[in-house]
Length: 273
Length: 241
Image (cartoon, rainbow over the protein chains, first blue to last red):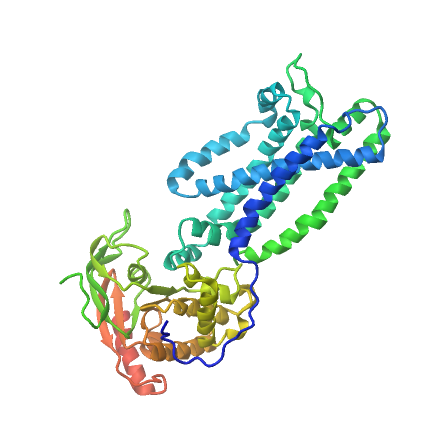
């Protein structure tokens, strides 16, 4: 190839290449997928876990319960990420989709999940998939935070950046992975933090299935930190209750320090000034 | 022969009109022709349609009337660099190439060359956040040059920079124009900037090209105070008419 720039003398040969955009895109889709697959395996394993309200509760039991709840939330989170990202991209694709979908989502979001619960739970219970019911509730609860923060992020991509993409011929799927996904990375992180907060909140309800089921539907509560808390408080086991709350707080704090703080720091790079 | 370019032409507008729904007419019957290797500067009050002309040349919009003939590879430099914050200077500069499917190693080599031309090869692995305004704009120009455009468009590229940095970038832009022979069309709101850089200045007003001035002063022009000021004065009188 003939070069039109003549005055070239030196080359910088040592260049550090950070993670390529492809890798970033892959990881964004692959990580949730892996979590879903791994989570499915864990769920199968959990089916053999102790019952929700054993007569004696050990620390080991509590840790086990925390882990079980964590996996339910993680699974629900992965699914909500897989659903919310394409949905956010779809909503902001054009004026038309935005005009139709956004009001629709607004209405959906305001429907209380617990009103949803009996209807959906009946479906899962019919197939004896109690975890499915809980995960569905958590997923619905988590998704809106993610969806709306991402839509907000997509709508604040600066006009200049869009023009740059247009001038250099970045369009279609290329535009999604080279511009939109990196641009909403900080929003995905903040949306995820909010979503996990919601998740820990709703887990306490979601695991205690019998409270929302129509009378007479055979079911069982799920083993997890949420159901442990509910049963301990119902049975006056103050010690167990306090221990479970402490463990929950430690777990959430650890996640904040180990995961969210780091991701927040990492996401700084993706912010427009 | 309305759609064909003369051998020496790279851009041609024939009675181009641009109407945006519900807005005032952006362009009215603009006809212009830019020759290969020319340095043209468009000036005019805000809202006169000068940015619309650039967008038409870049192919970002299509005219609602008349015809625009443009070359295949057009690239553009924006006001504040407009770099992608998550990419390094090198990756930003290579963006136009990788977007066309140029393999990463080739794209990075060409981008590195463009960064070197702009004198910021040493900052290749830095992120935009760590660069000054002038350095970012240099990366923005390198990104535009890396694709070896037939026409390089600049939309008020120095308006956010201090006087010293602007002066340095003027010099660099002229030297790149001389060495690469790239045709340059630049929009500016500064008459002095236009007269010190361009071979031809177009003064636009209300969607039309009102005046054209050929600037034949030898460069560097600012040093010939008398002649330079005379040119600027002529255009200024028309500008503030």
